[in-house]
Length: 364
Image (tube, rainbow, N blue to C red):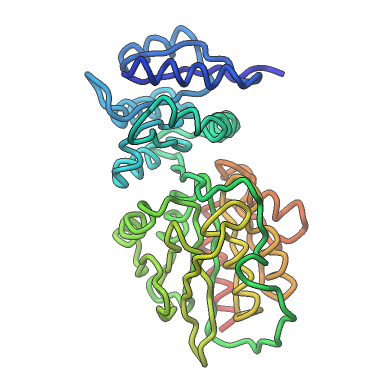
């Protein structure tokens, strides 16, 4: 098998050394070089033709985000950000993801050497995933989101919300759309929401794998770009048509029926499928409280979180849409929905919003 050729870009000699030793443990990854600043990195990219870059944010002569923007315009390639700033500054991280970074790993705040070694498995996994990601030029590419909330034990949605026989739900004009996504999801979500009208007769709930520090800034960012009203969900909040509720990065988002209303419920249970929020958890709550009045949408993402939930939602009579492979950055989550036979429709990203409007109108 061909090895993944990796170039490490970081102004810290210690970080370059530690990362090199970490990747030496991976038989399928070869560190072909390192660079202390973007200007050296530019020359080494030309000389070494790496498959993936790890890139620091704060560097001399040119910051990493500026370099990333230039790189994704001129020579698009998979990049994983490795920086303390991506942990501390949500705006910086989201900008890096918008510019085309596939993912990121935060450096520890203290004891960088030992801290990075603890993240070894995560860093290696993200570089492997980045090597398979679809990267597009800056003007066209979707940005990426980090898969977070990972734990070693993989739990199912039963850990948060027990399965129970599905009650009969009468179709109403109160439609609710559930969207799940992970790697690549921040830009995919924006693409879908920006195409929807403010008078959409459905509420939207979203579980995106994203760090807790970033979910609220992300919601505010999207709110300024779309005609819909977008916010980070809060417990007990009523779900209204034309409004979007994004799960906090450290809570599961559930939908409950309260009389004739849908409301958001936040749950601090364990990670499900190694994620919190989990798409499976949100979808099961839709099964139990909305049934055929719901619409399930699976966007780009790594892994299989949400696939079981989509299957349960389909069995309850709700239509299921999966993003197609060509427009997905990583066709893991939507691909799993398709492979299991749960998707009623497999659509390119730019067609999903139109189809949602058609389904909402047909339900009404």
